[in-house]
Length: 79
Image (cartoon, rainbow, N blue to C red; front, side):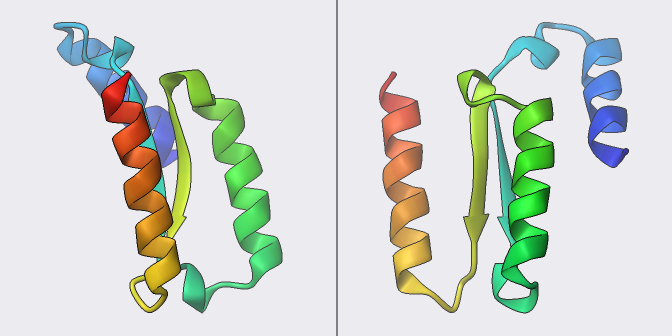
């Protein structure tokens, strides 16, 4: 997958980039069926557990979605 390819590139680059926390944001979720989004979230959570940052969804057409993401990012950055 492209995700794994990016992870390999980070590992090759070195300097600890592959060990840093990461956040995966699935965007434009208003354009995709909820079942598809839920499936993708599960797939990415296996690849990027919450201990490394987490998986988030976002649609710019939903203020609640933006506020939720912002609040969760603040919590991550405060740690």
